[in-house]
Length: 145
Image (tube, rainbow, N blue to C red; front, side, top):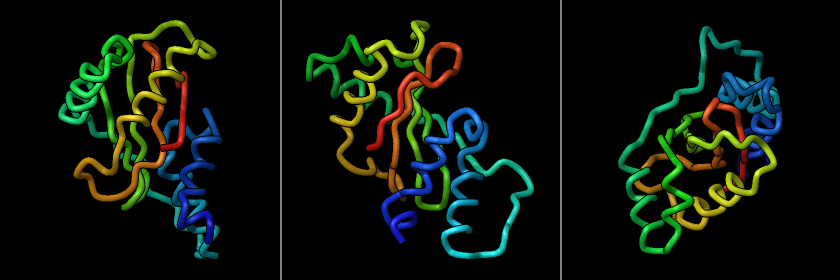
């Protein structure tokens, strides 16, 4: 029950790391089928849908400017909504950060996004996680929303 109600499957897909990175939506679907004891339903293609959302990024940047956090948010090149299921999605912030994992900047940026986030911002479903990606597309930070 907990896996389906509180986003446990999206968390497990996120924790699977590089093994699930290409298509976290497939991992989520597999987890949900397992929890429901449903028959295995292999997807015919990628399940995860990524859509850039320039409007949401601009709203995030506008908030950051008023809060004195523009310097952190200025590094974000793109914001993508990553649909994992019909109702669940993650948010990915692509940055020009080339510093690598372990740098406090990406963690700080993820926390800044969580502070700004106040709901679904007009999207259907539930945002589960925010991921900060580096210049090379590698995940630098991930936090639950």
